[in-house]
Length: 231
Image (cartoon, rainbow, N blue to C red; front, side, top):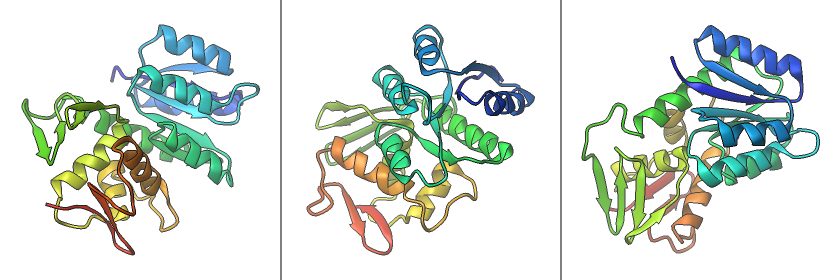
């Protein structure tokens, strides 16, 4: 693998451990122990994925997340404290694709990394056919180029937001549960009923699409079941 991964954590033992497990999977790893170092690094280096600790001294990992999203679409996984629910939601809102709670199992983190990279490559034209386009009521998704347009206006979507919208469009007319969306995107077993990851991504999509839950033009909530886009 030639994938280049950024790991940002001020706890050197954790950063070193993550590096060890990722290198065992043949990933290239660049470690940063401070936000300043990380911000300089993302300006100079092309990455395929970033793993960011939120709790950094001085500048938060959330700031790094936002800076990355200003210019890049590669996946971001946030490392969060056990009970920091607000940080998780904030990270997802700023454009993170996933989060994992400390303390975590290294193999679980590696599984998340693999899932994110698989999806990112797939939706950036590595494993799809040219001309794979979804068109629905003013919404255009180009699966090959990872571009999305709404009424001819480009939408800047994170890889996860693009995935959610694609799945809903491909299933239009049918309800897709949060659990189905989660497994379709991450392909692992870490979903729990208390997981609000999908809810946050849906909310963020609605904001970008100028859509609302109360009077939806595109994404409708089917309470107690999931989400759907009408045919």
